[in-house]
Every structure is written in structure tokens, then in C-alpha cells.
Image 1 (cartoon, rainbow, N blue to C red):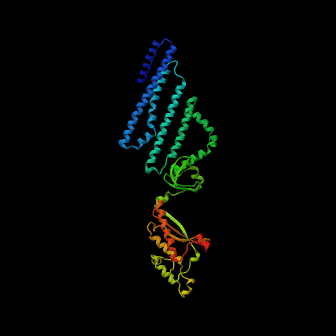
Image 2 (spheres, one colour):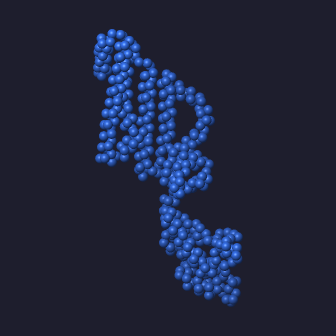
Length: 415
């Protein structure tokens, strides 16, 4: 009240002085409006510069002394700059009050512009706060698994929509509730026009609420030729950096509804990675073992222990006439399977306490697939591929020692 009384008193004195200096009433009124506006503009600029300088010094001090990530994020998103714009707005508000006291006050459009500027500025400040929340969430490792950018974008869309409604209401002079009621009647048409966008928004909200995908997850999506790590999740899309360093953007609707996504997150959390690969045995090289063959196999490092540790199969040579050995007894492939199991259970890099299986798959024209199923003790690609390559290098090299041939097309064609 005291400030309003002081301003009103100054206003009357200033108008009286102008009336004495400028005889013409019209010219005095014009000079009053022009000089008051110029003074208001000058004061606004000075206040804005002063406020910006003060906030800059304050945030810089906080960042240096407290190492405040929040202050740095607020500064990067220009929150303090937007707040400083309120100082000029307040100056103009009082200016409008002073000018409105005069019978020939300012046009009504100036008041509308002030209200629109205040609404837009409020939206910019709220948007800066929301962007700061996203930035701080990204920098904190404990919260990276809970991406909130999609939810923030949803809030921003609502904020922009309300801003538009209020601005239209200010210009037209109608109540915002009346405009919202009119938009509600046209909601069916809006949903038809923006069907794809609305579907994407709903899918993005579902991803965020249910934590189906997280930043840092390794996903595979063959239909989009995507295989890599998620770097960003928004309401309408998911950005993936593929292992070839390219970046793919996938619609969230496809991830939730239309396509199958393989998420490797739980594999990485378990600390192990599955090896499931087969070598193909030439069936013509599979035969029953004679005593001489068994003796030769047992001379291979680890075979004798592998046969002794086998519990279910009988790895003894056929009984009776050695010349009829092919009619019964164990096979060289069975001995090779026992050796593979023994080798894997003792190899560094293989988790012997998890599933470890050596199995035959259905025979094909190429031969008999012998699949090795086990788990490496790492999820990182480079060491995993090294362990897997070491295993199969060894098995391919040792197979001939068991009188087994591995299938390959060139040998088959020449056979």
C-alpha cells in the first residue's frame, strides 16, 4: 500500500509538472505516456541485468564451493534467467496501473500482452525445472535405471497445452473452462487426427511406469536391425546405439505392442553369459571302440579321468571276440562327449556349477550336430568371445584324435 501511494503521488506531481511545461493537453498526455514508458523500459533493463548478474554470481559460488549438480543443471537450463524476467514484468505492471489511473489510459491490448507474457514466462520456468529433474536423474547412477524423461515430456505437453488455452482465453476474453469444454466436444476429432501420436504417448508412459526398458539396457530387435544399448527413452521413441556405433530410433509403440524385443539386462545382472553352439560330426567317422582304440584315447590328457567320472554310460570295450568289436560296446563319439564334459567342467572361464550339457541334436544331411551348452563367467563381449573361441578351437583340434571327422561342405563334395 505504501509503495502504491508513493507511486500515485509521484504520478500526480509528474503530470502536473508536464501540464505546466507543455501547454497543449494532447501533447502533454503523449509526453506523459512516452516518458513513463521510456522510464519503465530503462528501469526494466537495469533490473534484469542486475538480477542476472546476482544470480550468476550466486550459482557460480554454489557450483565451486558446494559442487552442486542441481545448481549447475538449473543454470544450464536457464531457470535463473527466466526468473529475472519477472522483474521487468513487475515494473511494467505498476506502469500499467499508473497509466490506467488516467482517463486516457493505455489500450487494453497492453494489459493482455502483460498477462500473456506472465503465463508464457511461468511455463518456461516450469519447463526449466522439469528439464533440470531429467538432467539430475541422468547423472545419478542409482536412478539411471528409472528413466523419467518420458513422464516429464508428458507433463510438458500438458503444460504447453494449458499455456495455449490460457493465452487464447486472455486474447478472447473468455474463461479457460469454457475453452476446455469446447475442446472436450471436439476430442473425438482430435483423437482421430493425432491417433499415432496419442498411441506413442500411451506406449511411452507404459514403458516408463512398468520399467520395461531402462537406459543402458542391451536390446535386440531384428525387425528394425537393432542390436545395441539404449541411450535415451522418450515418450514417442527409444534411441539405441548399436554395436557398430550407428544410432537407431525405434517408436515406443513398436516396442510395447507390435514387435518382440529381447532384453539382455537380466543376463548382464546375472554375471554369466550362455554358450550354445554346435560342431557337426561326420556320421561316417562314428564307430565302436576296440580295446586298442580305447587304450589310445586314454593316453590323451584327461580322457581316463573323464571316463572314470562318467556315471551313466558304460565306457568299457566290447566283450567277446575283438574281431566283432563293431557289434557292441561304446563308441568313439561317446568317449569324445565324456571328454568334452570333463574339459568344460575344469576350464577357466566356464561356470561348472551352472548347466553344462553336451548333447546330440537331430541329424541332418550335413551330419550329426553335437551341441555344447554352458555358461561363461563374464557378460562382456570381448572376454566372452575369447572364451567361446578357445573352447571350440580346442574341440575342433582334438576331434581327430578320437578318429572323428568334422563336417564341412568342401569335404562332403569331394567325398
